Length: 171
Image (cartoon, rainbow, N blue to C red; front, side):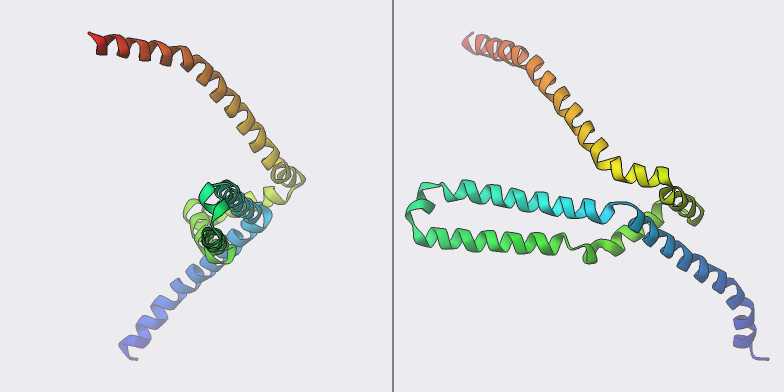
């Protein structure tokens, strides 16, 4: 028997379980994506980006140069169209899905994914995913309120600091 045949017989049995485990992990990662709202969250991010483009367009359309100059309007429209195309390309789920799969596989073991997916498939997991955005929105509301309180507390400190700097500058 040739050496390559012997090596083949010795190595292949170890490669097959590894390949199967890899295939199973990939399937679990895809199931994880399917069970979570990851693609929908990604789509919301794209929509927010496009909303920001629209908001910028509205502001730019009010600029005196754009109001009075047809060439400026055409240039602006071209820029906005290119920005929207760039957003669609950058936020293409098909383009980034493999990156997310790799990230999931880099973070979770096959066993962890299998058990997480089992839980996500349960009524509590489904409820968790459905309510996750609501909970996130509530977190953001709370954090925004905290930021407002902080800003209110900072106003007198800023005044005091500006007064002190002015006083030191006059000496």
